[in-house]
Image (tube, rainbow, N blue to C red; front, top):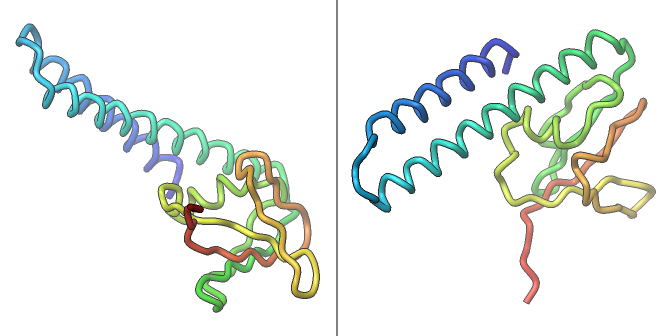
Length: 142
């Protein structure tokens, strides 16, 4: 998404939250109103994060002409090949792809038949070169 789209999404979310707040005004406590406000506040937070991420990516793209290629492998097959600026975090890439809310595990190929889990998406920056990242559904232990 472009930065302008993210700004519009944020503005719309804030307006919806403020409209809800105004509409409930001095009504008595209602759990449904509180649930709606919570959902709207989460939408505002997500839109703000997306807007900040888009701005950060735009800044990185304008300051860095160096890129890296990332091959994302889902279900044992190459799902997507993307080219991103060096320094892009995995969190930014996942958000851009729209996978931010999916419970997924990401593993980077580190050698023949060897992978390493990427536990900190925010702290993992992609460096120059080619990357193969395996994307699998997160499985709860038990």
